[in-house]
Amino acid sequence: MPAEVISLGCRLNLSESEDLRAMLASEPDLVVINSCAVTGEAVRQTRQAIRRARRDRPEARLIVTGCAAEVERQALAAMPEVDGLIVNTAKLDPRAWNIAPPQTDVRPQHTRAFIAVQNGCDHACTFCVIPQGRGPSRSLTIAQVLRELERHLATGCREAVLTGVDLTSWGHDLPDRPTLGALVAAIMAAFPDLPRLRLSSLDGIEIDPALFELLAHEPRVMPHVHLSLQHGDDLILKRMKRRHLRHDAVALVSALKAARPEIAIGADLIAGFPTEDEAAHAANLSIIRELGIVHGHVFPYSARVGTPAARMPQVPPATIKSRAAELRAAVAAERAAWLQALLGKPQEVLAERDGTGHAPNFARVQLAPGTQAGLIVTVTPTRIVEGLLA
Image 1 (cartoon, helix red, strand yellow):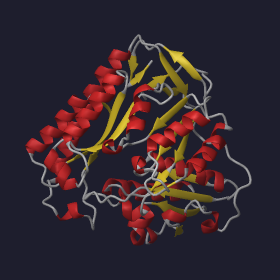
Image 2 (cartoon, helix red, strand yellow):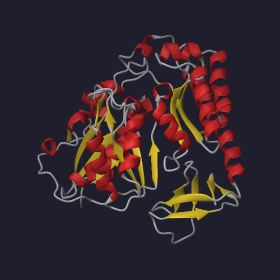
Image 3 (cartoon, rainbow, N blue to C red):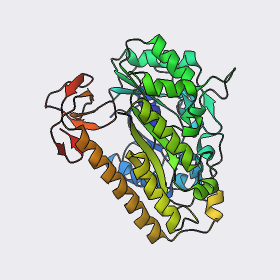
């Protein structure tokens, strides 16, 4: 059997997994777990994926890479199912796998191309181990990004998604410190036939003026902003060592929606951060409604050994669980109302291979049977079926 790559975690991992599949396409009987370590739950899921892969492919060589391979190296290496680990920073280097560089591209599994333009992080959020897993921030140059995007466009992809660990810090390590807005503008100019460009998670405080203008007014930049928000309470944000406060997020979203009313807001939110009391949790709940968060990723806080937050007074696990459920319910209510408002409004949907697709605002849409993957089709939804427009 050909090499299998199992991807966990963020869009950056998804992008890197596509590259791993291409690089390892000729390697037989190999399973790669591209792991995640952002939370304790992510590590648990990594271990679960390792055990499941070993059951499914008992004769294969099983290799683990990704963030958990750095942060939890000894624990994962001790698992009897694991044959070896590849350090995260070397996983896309053929020499680490003792193979020659591939001579041909392999068509990606997705009709969207995930382009990892940035990796690592220079910040020190008190809850986060990702800098340990990915190292300092480093960026591809504009020329490198354009070459990578050209390669994906040659396969027929219709939407590019720029990803990174800290995407809005792109360019800070390059000569003249270009901004992410400059990169997006360069892509728009270089590829006038690219129908859609989407951005993964953004640190709102680092959205530069050029990027704001593109998000607000460029039709080919999708009206979908996912914020690395984390919380709605100022004191908790300070204890997280985030660089924004609640009013910064409110002002940004207000300005974006004033300029482009159809823009959809997503956000990462942490439930039960150490010292979070009922008032702080209430602030976290209320920012969902205030910003109109319809794409919410809620993470129950889990202490990571070696981080400052792990040494702070902890919230009881049962309380964390219940608060996470409340946050998810609040996001679900916002999303339900938003989907209802989209009924009867035509959506330009990029068809995926699973019979669904995404509108520009990232609403997921059920498509007619037989719709060809990669096409952009107009759908006027009339109902909502299991959370999908149809």
